[in-house]
Image 1 (cartoon, helix red, strand yellow):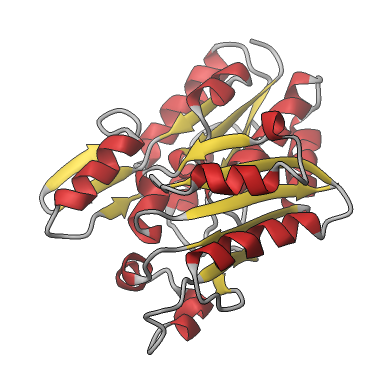
Image 2 (cartoon, one colour; image 1 turned 135 degrees about the horizontal axis):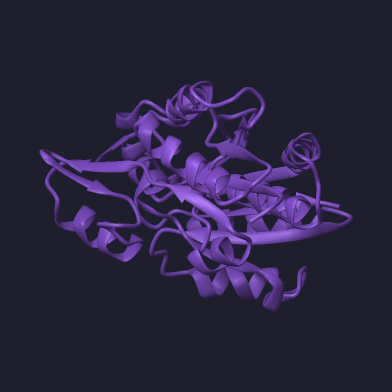
Amino acid sequence: MAGVRIVTDSSCDLPADLADAQGITIVPLSIRFGSDELVDRRDLTPAQFWERCAASPVLPETAAPAPGLFAEAYRAALDGGADGVVCINISSKLSATIQSAQAAANDLPDGSVRVMDSRSVSMGLGMIALAAAEAAGAGATVEEVVGAAEAAAGRNRVIATLDTLENLKKGGRIGGAQALLGSLLSIKPVIEVVDGKVEPGPKQRTRSRALRWLVDQVAAEPKIEQLAVMHGAAPDLGELLDLLSSHFPREQIVVADVGPVIGTHSGPRVIGLSYRKG
């Protein structure tokens, strides 16, 4: 296939149908439960992951893909006739995944693969990959696709509320959200991804207030071009969608499952938003 192909990693939480429709290749990370290692999206669906989490005595861990997995994705695209590849990855401040992606790119001809740090996670990364794929589909060059992805990243916001801080704390990804720890057992933490790091948002006393804070952020924007809701088996998904429908057409909201990579650190019942400002 001529043109530029997009590669990303499985922390993007992109629904498979959206990724397939845009020709986006997703390289999987691995998930470990003790001595059991499973490949994201191949060995483990989000539903299976959450079921396993509920039954497991240990918290899961994640592992970045080996460079060889990225190399396979690059070669498949280039051997298939692609003019170039743009690989967009989870924030380098949260994962070593981009190092594997770059190592694989270094073994290919100069300029054939560009690796980009999204400085985002979950559907924040997914939306950036979609923006890149749309540009590629319109005939953009590698440089133009990178530019489109960077522009999308600059207008993207990721916010969420967690049901627990245990996973984030033990996984070492808490960053500035450390301020949420301590005597906040009754608090429902709100977090935001800022410049690739997890930072605390305003403290919310109840889950319901946390959901309304998420909606208030959407309502305060003059224009939103794209909106996604991502959740990890959250029981109040319908409630959040109902609240959002007053501010954004419900049928245009992308609903995504938080998969094992992000779920390992967010914990169960996480629910959040990714949106691109107009």
